[in-house]
Length: 151
Image 1: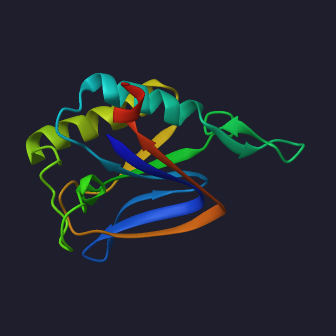
Image 2: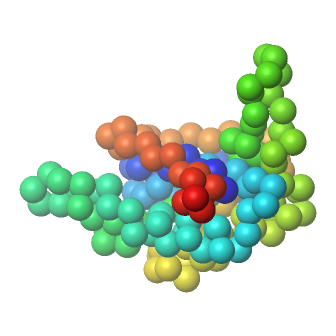
Image 3: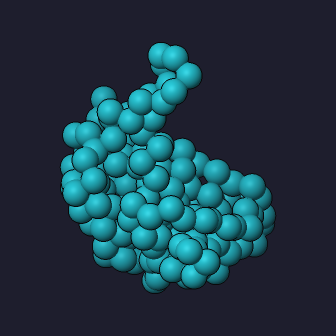
């Protein structure tokens, strides 16, 4: 799994002009599911996301997690994170998991965030054309790739 996590003041995703997911302070997370990803990848990524300490404490050090601040997470599926751009100028998406498998792991990842203590997890609409807006806080942006953790 690949993910781009941004610390935000707020974020929202809309489909056809209607809000389908909206959060206050927390994380906006774009999630790409790769061929070969498993429930174990989703579990590890959810745990890492919940425990990541990038919110500031009273000494202005990044020392608090989304759990510590009672924050929320907005998860948006984004198969384009799986793009391979080694050859040519048009990305290949052959590394992306098939839609049924990707949707299942996406939903499982969201449920694992809740299991790991995140108070509210909002989502986009899997496979839809979405518009995402956010107020990045910092900015703080973290890139996750579970394939690196398997080595």
